[in-house]
Amino acid sequence: MTIVRAATREDLDAVVDLEAQLFGRAAWSRGAVEAEFAGLGETRHIVVAVEVRRVVGYAMLLEVADAADVHRIAVDADHRGSGIAHALLGALLDKASSTGNLAVLLEVAADNAAGLALYAKHGFVEIDRRPRYYPGDVDAVVMHKPLEPTR
Ligand SMILES: CC(C)(COP(=O)(O)OP(=O)(O)OC[C@H]1O[C@@H](n2cnc3c(N)ncnc32)[C@H](O)[C@@H]1OP(=O)(O)O)[C@@H](O)C(=O)NCCC(=O)NCCS
Image 1 (cartoon, rainbow, N blue to C red):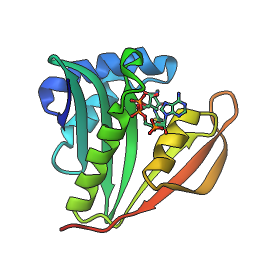
Image 2: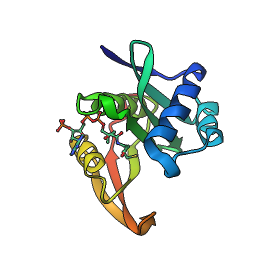
Image 3: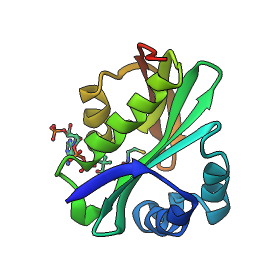
Image 4: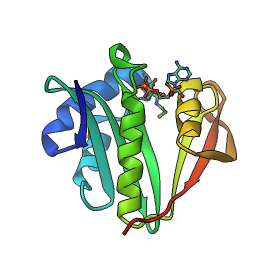
């Protein structure tokens, strides 16, 4: 069974390892992931998906003023296709609503079919493009979702 919960500092190593494994040369450094964890409970919110005490997915949110930004969402390749990203993103969006955000923004590579479909299912719509933003001259699609704050 997979559970999704708020990350703690004890999850740092697992997230660093997964980040390197899943994103390769584009992975955030340990220092960059540490910076995300350093803001936990303040400007940063991180959720992890855990299966038998092993972290198999994570998602990160940055809050800026009254908007939030999805920084990362990733699921271990062996655990994809079973709704874990749905659960992680749902948890982040609930968190963003509960802390008073009016909108969530994100960027996703235009050739990332799974990411685009995931975000569309959660109500994100394309509002802009950044041409050749990613390696290989891949555009970034900027997506937006308005929120109903629950606070
Ligand atoms: C994108 C990613 C997070 C999806 O994780 P996942 O746990 O397999 O996703 P889920 O099983 O929760 O599926 C969620 C939705 O994503 C979409 N999706 C997932 N895999 C897909 C695929 N191979 N092709 C097309 N759409 C896909 C679907 O819309 C799916 O909803 P549905 O099953 O109701 O149709 C995962 O593929 C991943 O980690 N990719 C590498 C990192 C990445 O690209 N992150 C996103 C941008 S930072």
